[in-house]
Structures are given as C-alpha cells and as structure tokens.
Image (cartoon, rainbow, N blue to C red; front, top):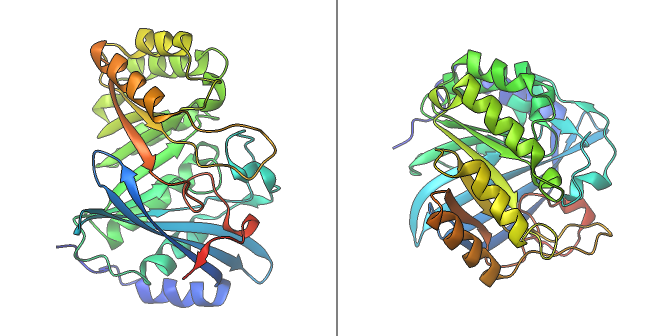
Length: 309
C-alpha cells in the first residue's frame, strides 16, 4: 500500500502549479501490452500550459496484469520543446525553447499525480521519459528525484536519456539515489553501427555503474529494414553477451513526421528475442499491441485523433 504525499510542501506546490500551470487537454488510450511487467495499460497524456504562454506534455500510465494494479508511471518532460533530433520521435517537430526548472518539473509531477489515486498500486515510478533530454540537466534531475523521494519515499526513479552528455552518468552515479533505473536510448546511432552504444557500455563497465543503479537497460527501437538486420543483431550480441545490461526491444509508435519508417514485424521481434537469449544477452519486448498515439515519441497537440478524457 503506497503512502499518500507526506511532504509538507505538497499543498504549496500544488497551489503554485494551479497558478503557473494549466491543463489544456487530456487524452486517454487503453491498450494491451507486450511487457514482462504488465499486460494492460491505461494511458493519459496531458497538454499543459505554463504561465499562459509555453506548452509541455506529461503522460501518466496505469499498468495492470489483467485487473491487478501493478504500477503507475509519470513521464516527466524536462524541456519546452526538445533540443534533440531523434528521427523516430515526434518531438523533433517542435522547436526547443528552454529547459524547465527543477520546481517546474516537480509541479508538473504533482499536478498530474494529484488527479490519479495511486495508493493501491504496487509501485509509483517517476520517469524522466517525456519531452526533452535529461542528460543536459543532470543536477536538476537529481534535485527533482530527491524531492520526490521526500514526498513519496518508496517511489522508483527512472532516468531515460540519449546520453547526449556522457558526464551526466557520473553525476547521477555520485548522487547515490537508491532504486534508480537507468534507460539509455541509442537508436539513432544503432541505425549506423552501434558505436555509441558500445562506448557507453565500456564506460559503464569502467565506472562499475551496475553497482550504483538498480537496473541499466538500453532501449532499442526495432525499425523495419533499418536496424533489424543480421548485422545489427550480430553487433548487439558482440556488445552485450554475458553482461548484466538489458536490451529493451521497443515497438515504434508511428511518429508524426515525414520519414517513411515503421516498426519491425512481430516475427522479427521474436527472432531478435530468441537469438539474443541464445547468445546470453538479457532482453525483453516492450510496446503496445496497437498503434499507440499517446505513448513515448508521440505528441497530442499534433494529433487530433485521440480520445479526450
């Protein structure tokens, strides 16, 4: 049973967010899921206005095994717009304006959590997995994570990053925040030759990162005829065989951009899963069974097809 908010700042933070942040729209989607942790997701994605001028998006996802409540995860945005240019993500279609402050990220989380009772879910996850690149503001991520631990002491922290700033990993390691998962996306580079992923693994080995994070996984978005070939599989095996890092084979959510790309077939996913496992590479498949319009890589303000809350 989760504790309710225990920090005395909760009310003042929520009052501040009611003044500075306003929900413009909310969209809802329910979908069956590929995941070792849950098989159904109820997702809500919010379009939020800050100070009557800037817009961000925040997702909250309720996870179930059948009808058993497992986890509730908030996908936090850390930027207005995005400074990255990941070709498989809709965020490339909006201009970068600025980084959010730590207080703005905290207000964003509490504003959304206050709308969704979470006490009967097994886990609460604060995931820096929304719009923006977390490694470009590592100190702010640490500040927000520590504040959330004061408010919900047993929440999990998930830091998702492209690794744009490699020094961020050492700062997060030195912060020593327990129950923190690290998720690294190297899909942009994996289209070419996976060099960046290999370099990060070497650095993680040297820094003994697995001693400081509860889990480290690499998100690999499997894209048809682009990074799902035999040479990509062989390279993944050469980098990860026998190591304790995990490959998260992710489904592509169709992006709102002009690139004619699509997710790999179920058969290709199963082939990669099987071959990686045979070669002692930890991995799992992840993603909705439907074409999601509000999950990772999606923007609600660009798409009017979603079902409003």
